[in-house]
Length: 107
Length: 127
Image (cartoon, rainbow over all chains, first blue to last red):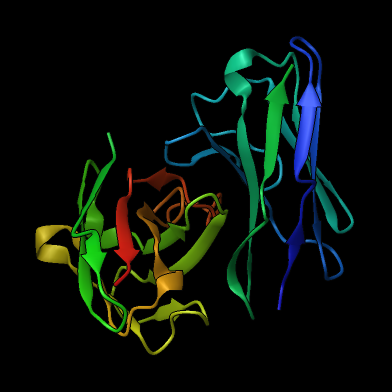
């Protein structure tokens, strides 16, 4: 089965850059999507297809991918970015797979 | 704007059954596949099931296969999740979500993304 790995937590000071990685257990990770979930709220798609942003998502959110690792970067972090972030892929054998999530704490 | 509103959650005993509903609006419901995704208390997101817009294909997570059934009524823009043989580990907030950024064939972006989510309905399996 397809498994995604993420760091449990990332801490970042306001105005700095937060980097969240998502690793796949197979060669060349699939097309990756990223979701932000604030406490008590539904997830929000912030990056799709590795690096594209839905309308309304600030440019501070960017995505990239290399080999079997995808990265979500939040530049100029704000207090309102404090949330859980999940990566997600589709795999022909495992269907839709989510990573375990990364809690971003703004110091 | 896209709206997804879940209902039907509640407390059910182990071994019991429950049907969740999701009322959709703001988009052409019968041209998009739909998902159910759940989140146990304090845990991460777990994909549950997906149903094509034509209802001809459906896939389930191994954890619910044979116990849950996803269905839809396109005439009422409503998605359902029938849950049977419920277990304590099925306790979660269940989200209804739309499949893909665009309806099939209209674009090739975000095909496997889940861009729109409801607010969720809580299912508690407990005696």
